[in-house]
Image (cartoon, rainbow, N blue to C red; front, side, top):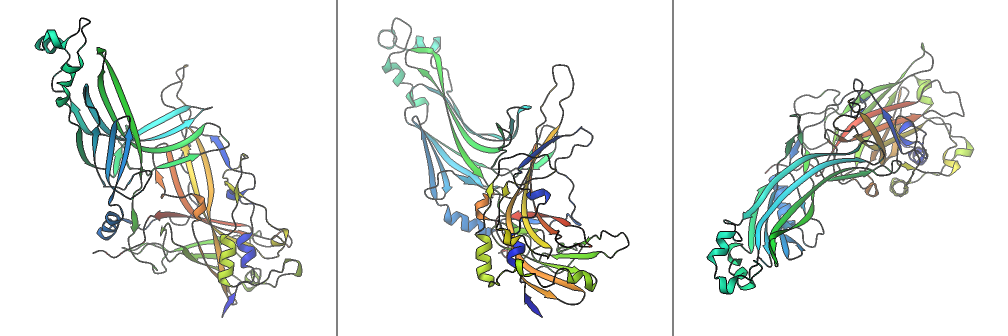
Length: 505
């Protein structure tokens, strides 16, 4: 029999004091030796296998091409950069993996121009003002357009070839009429076309996927940021009017957003499986809620994710949480609530609206806990008074930064490796209904990425910067009664995709 879960509002809105959601906690930093250094702490998930991600299909590409039929134009001091294949009216151009960067460079006044170079550049930068300084890793560097004057027109031979009476002043500078005769050497328009790579290789020979554009700041550490940035740099070298030996370099930098497009390898729901087999990913994640009594009975937890661990970023993630055990343990999650903690029953639609409208404001204090969150909030005390365990399903994004400096210290010692963690709750789960029998109780619901969380890309890993997403199931036992069970926390790695599954053409 299907029952409306009477505590859905309380369970979803409770802010349990777990490691990843401690009020007034945002960031921690701890130093590790080279031996125990790890970019991301090991996951407690029973399985870390992801469903394979597939590149965008031809149908998605055609959709993007139809949507991005406009041009992006940037003008800097007489040098115009035009990029084709962009959406109309965008302020920043955007490209995906394997995209063609197609456009042209136009010079309004080519007089005296000796060299024009266009370069596409990308880098990962970790900056810590009060620590080890700046660490920059180049992930993309390619010259996409280059023009150089075929012969230096301003050397002694060029001067001798000109008419002395009308072309050169007594001070050795060209007259404007002579300089005008050299304008034809520089083209006014230079087209370019290149294809973005999908991977890069660092200085140590390790191969990584090209990371998406990303920016993260840690408020508790002034001057600290982790940044992944891409841009197109146009450099123009020309001689000045009154001095042939003086060259002036003009550099314009046009940033663009790199956003790889991915989709799941198949359509969900996937079958209920605890091990991957062929194209069928893992969807069942089993753990146990331990008892305080070593000889006591544990409770079995089974989480079912029909979408597997690879989920579209902008779609809800359904889940089913089944808790199995003896009748006495199951009764802990289904007993009648006391009068002070009574909450009215809401319909699913109203409940979903209420929960998604609850937004926590960022906190700016620091803590020394092992994990922390940038979201915290204070709820009405009526939500906290319940004799039922508080069940919470949340999406959490963890940013890990390696702030170790390069090179040696002045005393010749190696720089120490350090690591900063920032965990942010980016989505809260909603419990809609429960199914109860003598040996188990099952909760059904869904969790989504909050649009206000600012998540625009999937997780990625580089040498100095790692971004990972996870689904955390936590059960906080009530303190008003003596519970035989301990608090429970399970971490399931999640990999987001930018698009849902579509059938191949």
